[in-house]
Length: 97
Image (cartoon, rainbow, N blue to C red; front, side):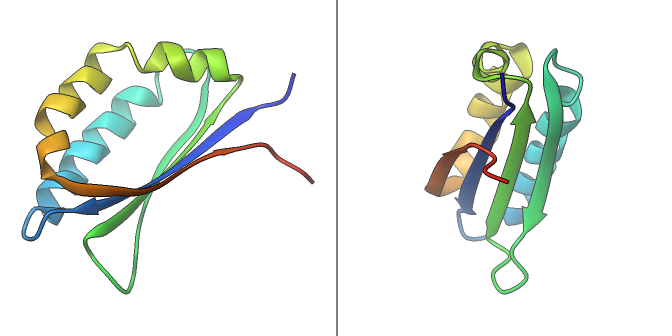
């Protein structure tokens, strides 16, 4: 079985990018402890501070799906979700090389 990768590109509401980053950082810190999590990293767009990229790596898709039911993901939805203007892209990825 190969690892499961996910990339999500968030675009923060105007003036909410710093708070959204803090919410995502708290989510990432908790998520890195989830069973099956191998990587949970945040990246900021150097050209646009409102764009934040989340990159996840899991042992399998089932682990990532269980992660979605955790308290910290639900808390992020309630607290961080309103600070997101849009989700620009979501990619489910498989390593090819």
